[in-house]
Image 1 (cartoon, rainbow, N blue to C red):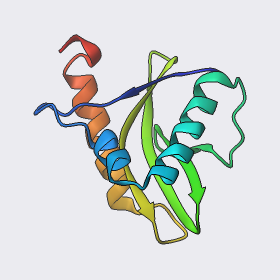
Image 2 (image 1 turned 90 degrees about the horizontal axis):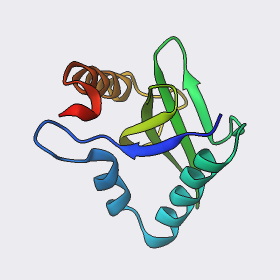
Image 3 (image 1 turned 90 degrees about the vertical axis):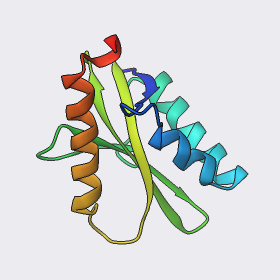
Image 4 (image 1 turned 180 degrees about the vertical axis):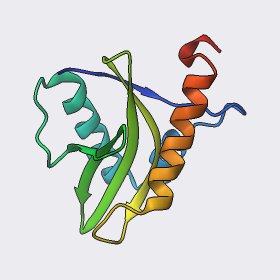
Length: 118
């Protein structure tokens, strides 16, 4: 399925995923942008780049670049929009529970505030 990729904004209008992208080097940011474009344009994105974190309603955008593993957590809205919550550099084999909890909290805040209606 092809998704429209959007950035989540907190109630204080901060954009954690954009802040993460801004913190990356130019070439790392280019690779992240390439993967996000792949998600927007490719009907079946390989798990190498995009994977659901079971049993949660959270998806992981997966980027490898220059020996680092970058992750951007996200959720689906209206089955066609991918909302990017925040990113981090993955240092462990499993996605850290605190990062999943942060994405779940952002998702809950987004949905409780009516999605894009705020």
